[in-house]
Length: 142
Length: 328
Image (tube, rainbow over all chains, first blue to last red; front, side, top):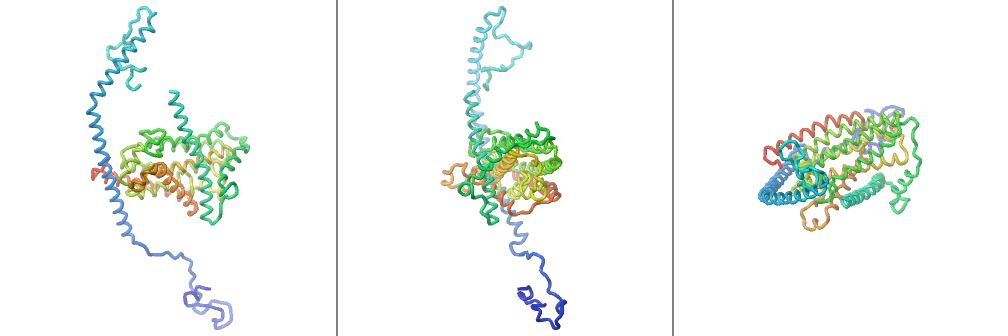
C-alpha cells in the first residue's frame, strides 16, 4: 500500500489513474516522500520538567541537610563524651607507661649487666629534653 | 602477628575468589542479556543454560600457547596484563559490602580509589608500547586519552558527593545517605557519573579504542592466552568496581530502599549486590541499545559537556550547603 492510498493525499494511487498511458510523473507531481522520523511532541513541557526536577532536587537537598545536621549533633556528642572521660584515659595511660618503663629498665639492667660503666636508664640523647620512647612496648600505641 | 597475617590472607581470598567468579559469570550474563535483547538464545550448549560457558572459555585461554612477538619488549609485555589485573583487584580493598564488611576501612578510601583507577592507565600504556606494534600503540594511546579525559569529570562529581558527606571514608559516605540516597538530590550527577564510568571502562558506546568492526582490537592485539585473559578479567572487574562505586555514592550502598523493619532483616550485602547488579545490567543494556561514538564526539562530550556541568554542580551544591548551613 502506498502512502497516497493510506492517507488520501493527492497523487497517483494506481497507474490506471493516468490520463495518458506513458511514463512520467502523475498530474500534480508525485506525493511527498516521508523521510523524516515522526517525533511525538506529547509529554510534559520543558518548564514542567524543570519545575518538577527542581522540586525533587530541592527536597533531596533539604533531606541531605537534615541528615548532616543530625550527624553534626552526633559528632558533637561523641567529642563531648571523649572530653569527659579524657582525664580517666590519660591516668590509665600514665599508669601503664610507668609500669612498662619499670619493666623495660629491669630488662635493660639484665641485658647490660656485663658491660662495665653502663648506667641503666640513661638518656641516649645529648639534649636534656625528654624524648618519647621510639620503639618497643613502652610506646602508647603498641 | 602470624594470626593477623593469616586472617588477612584468608579475608583476601574470601574476597577475591567470589569476585573472579562474579567476573566470569558477568561475561556469561552479558552474552545472555545481549542475546535476549536481540531475540537470540545466547550460549546454551556448555552446561544447562550455558552455565559452564565461562569456565570453558577460561580453560581454553589457559591451555593456549602464549604467543610472544619477537620484537616485543618482553619484560614489560608480560608485566602489563599482570598490572592491569592486579589494579582491578586492589580497588576492592576499600569497598564496603555491608556495615563494617570491608577489608580496609581507610579514612582516605576515596583518594585510594582515585589513585588506583589513575594507575590503571599505565597497564594499558605499557601494553601498547611494549607490543612494538603500531596498532597496539595507537590503540593504547586512544584508550589512555579517553580514560584520562573522563577521570576529570568523575573527580568533580565525587567532589560534589564529598561536599554532602564530609568524609572520604566510603562507609561514612553510605551512612550519610541514611536520610536520603544521593540519587534524589544529585540525580543529574548520577547520570553523568554513569556515563563517565562507561567511558572510563572503555565500554560501549565509548568502546571505540577497541571497536571490533572498525579497527583491530586496540591495545591488546598482540596478546593471546593468559595475557589476554588477564586483560579481559581486569576490564570486567573494573566494570563491577564502577558499578559498586555508583551504588556506594548514589544508591546508598548496603542500605535497604525503604526503612521497613522487614527490609532490615535482609543482610546489607544482599541490597548492595542487587544494586550493583542493576548497574551492571545497565552497562549491558547501553551496549545493546546505543551506537558507537566518534572520537571527536567522545572528546567533546568529556571536555565540553560533562566537565563544565560537573563543575557547575560543585558550585551549586556547595552554595546550597553553605547558604543553608547544611555542611556536615
